Image (cartoon, rainbow, N blue to C red):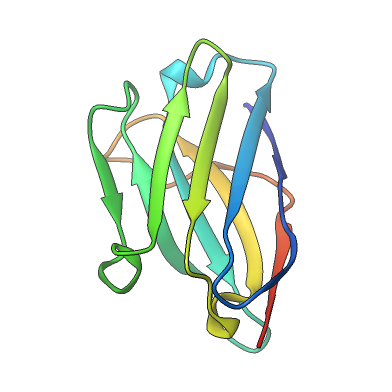
Length: 119
C-alpha cells in the first residue's frame, strides 16, 4: 500500500492556473501507474488524467485536454497535475490515485485537495 498526499489546491480566479502535487510515502511511485480524479458536490467522481509508470504515456479526459496536463517525477516520488485556464466548473476535490498496472483498478487514494475557481 502506498500513502498519497495531495497539495496545491486553493482558491483561484477564473482563467488562472494551479499545479497540484501528489506525494507518496511508504513505497516508490515508480511501481505504480497514477491518476487524478475529481469530485464536485452532488456529482460523481470523474477521471481527469493518468500517467504510466515511467511517464512515457499519459491520458487526459477529452474535455480537459486543452487545459490540463499530468506528469511525474519518479526520482522525487511525485506526480503533478498542471491546470490552466481554470473555469468555475473545475471546482472540485481533486484526488490522486495509484494502481499496480493497467489491468487493475486504482487501489490507493489520497485524501484530496480542494480547488475552487471563482468567476
